[in-house]
Length: 103
Image 1: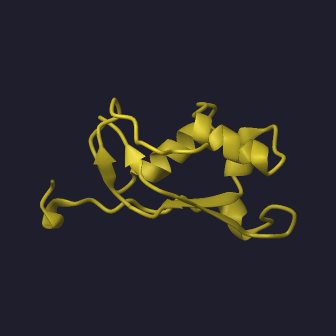
Image 2: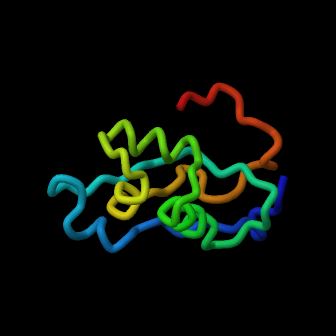
């Protein structure tokens, strides 16, 4: 367990399109649970991950969420939706799948 003083808090993904025009005139904020990764933790972790999604990387969770809202273009959706995690720091290595996760 990391020392609380050493814990990194991730910044929120808030693209320009979130404020205007939003999605169908509404601002959509998505709250995730946590990030699991072997990559080094840093405050921009969430922003970097979502920028990769906007740039074309396909991560199942983010693709599924965009489809749920009726967007075939994953990049378009995540260019307009805010995202943050309830637990705003890495909680475990990427090769250990979280239990009881539904996508």
